[in-house]
Image 1: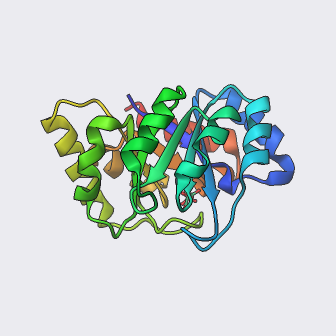
Image 2: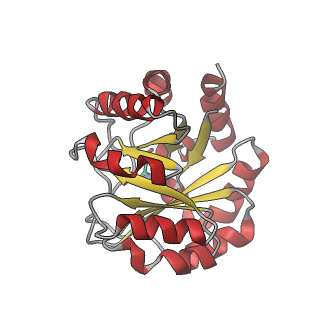
Length: 217
Ligand code: DX5
Ligand code: ZN
């Protein structure tokens, strides 16, 4: 099954409630929440207060992407504030098994993310302990960047590894996803599609429909 997860990093924060309502009226079921700490990535985005407000406004699945050093420090609080799933970076955490298990025990979906320059094999030890693998398709930190083409191979490799083990784990992609490269990403094995600027720039409802049309093909 394919899913679209619009990233609110590209939302107009003065209009966030209205924009969430538009997404809520579409058939989208997920919302991607990019948390950045200015350490793991150069930029700082938003954190607890925004997550709490978003949770009050929408029933969408809140897919929290922690671009944060030592994310284990925040798992409890993010779950308490309404996250449905938490994704931690393989590059950012020294106690990955324990943190994934903590997310699971609190009722969350567990994700592991990997940067474009980290070999895909680095997530293989965890694939039986996660619900989702997030293959970053740009350097994390900013919306609106161009897709890094070498990531197609990483998506294929991780999907092959999952199939080999008979695991039905979601493969998420994040960064630079546009209508033009969507089909190629689905064909490579991605099924959870994050997109920020391509949804929030222009008419949100129309942009979502255009994505969903390709995803249901
Ligand atoms: C980047 C974030 C992405 C970002 C994607 O570090 O993780 O989720 O919002 O934005 P676009 O789709 O504009 O590349
Ligand atoms: Zn993200």
